[in-house]
Length: 376
Image (cartoon, rainbow, N blue to C red; front, side, top):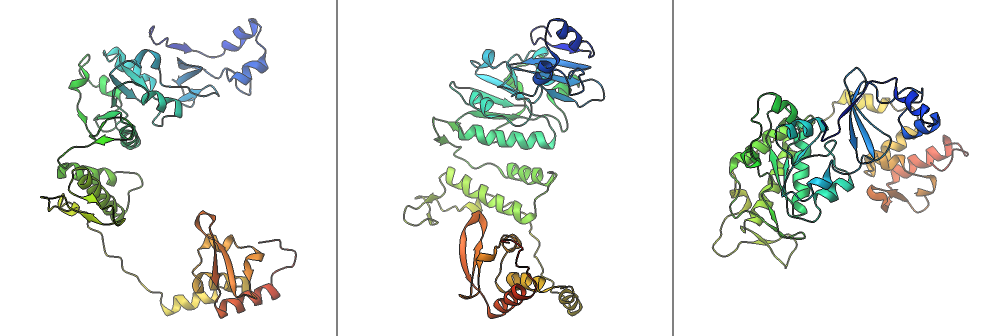
């Protein structure tokens, strides 16, 4: 506690003490030490001083995390750890306190799962180091761990993911009886992206493909996500992983002649699909047409010529709903039989109008559209 300067704010005492020192109430509100109601911001909280900020963890019913309304700054205690060859990165400051109490003095904290720009530059700054990523064992922590591993690898920083029990964080992991004081090399880790940086963006990857068990674990991990992807999405991701691993292992090489062509190196006959035989069964999509009654009810639901014009643009001209909503009056060129459409990326294109669509739009503009309705 003394090394990390951990304190406690009971509340209902900071304002009176600071005002007795001459600090006005408006200044204390602007700094965030007082709320809009004039009470202490940090009340019944464990306090951790940061570089240019404060962090308070509630022990009551209030919001669990609270910072001053300023930037959170860089990595915790980075000035002392920047020369370390092995750095353990955790999410919260309680994890740092527990890890350092157990003998892991090279533990750092990102104050959450998402690193800001300053923290990212510190982590990938000068010096050769290995990052042991010990984010929480829940779904959000593990997803952030994979993303951080990819980003570090692209920058040439070696990273390893520490496998914590499901739902555990380092603090709870140590409280459950994990061995204190053991070396980093004794951790159960996984090389999620076993690529060693050689400077810049040059990466040296393994010469042998990963075993199928890694791919199976990747499939199961995707199935546990809160927003579980569709089987077709997982299959597409597996194809991308196969292509990447085959290229890194030298099984295929992009041809300089054509963009998408490939040729095998001499002596190799393997293709990306033969690296792993693991796949996800994608159910065949069956298109069920509308019944005659459903079509009748659909046409009977139109209440105005505007509805018919919208359906004509989507059905006969293939416009998306957002493109129809983004149309302006000057985009409709009935005299030329064309339509100016702003699609994805605000790209402008000209579409020819079908005679039926021209007739619908002309009826709508003449009969229903007010003259003072604006540009849309």
